[in-house]
Image 1 (tube, rainbow, N blue to C red):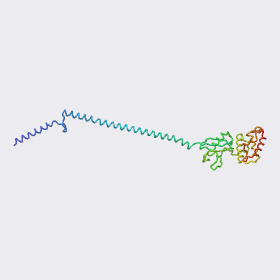
Image 2 (cartoon, rainbow, N blue to C red):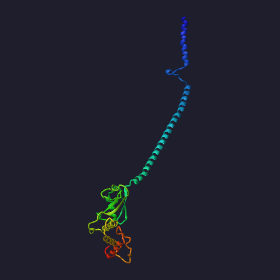
Image 3 (cartoon, rainbow, N blue to C red):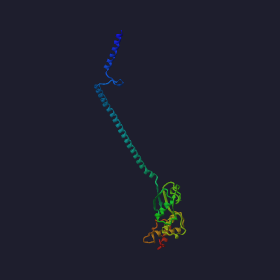
Image 4 (tube, helix red, strand yellow):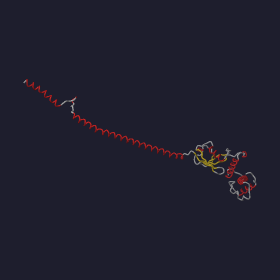
Length: 277
């Protein structure tokens, strides 16, 4: 029995060695070593896998480029739209600005009726004082002796008012057009002391208007005498060849103009021959 068990123990190591040899050599950590053919096949499979993975990466790169290009186009389009909107806003402001000037003018047109019945028109700044307009009128008339004259206007109740030269015009005329009249404010106590003939002329025009309108009452004799001087200054000496019976019919000497007054004016006019006009 001892002999059989010894032979069995000797045969077992031999049987265990055979499977190890059949299994072949193994690498570290239990990895099986490949032969040359198997290594070649494994290398081909690795290269094929690497070649297959390259287009995937390339496809991702193209998508990124397409996304970047699309984003750039969108940004460019948005910038273009913003520029258009800015241009429209600027043009709109420019188109509205002239309307604002029209609605709020910085100057006002003034019309002034002069003593001879003519009209003088000028522009003054909206904030101008009355003195500015008065100086413009006097300059137009070549008038130096200004103290006897002034400007008048009618208020909303049609009342006559003197324009204050020290105040702004817009604070005196609250509404309506800026219409004025040039008038004598007061008469000098001694007209002979006046130095300018133009001053005397405008005083006479005012005096005539006051008499004809009835603001300055006069007697019949005074009306006739003043009327004769008016005709002498306008027509000169009486000339029977040129002056007919109705040569003064266009003149007015009083509020109530009569034929009797005309005859008296003609009589006095004949006596003014060679008088200075």
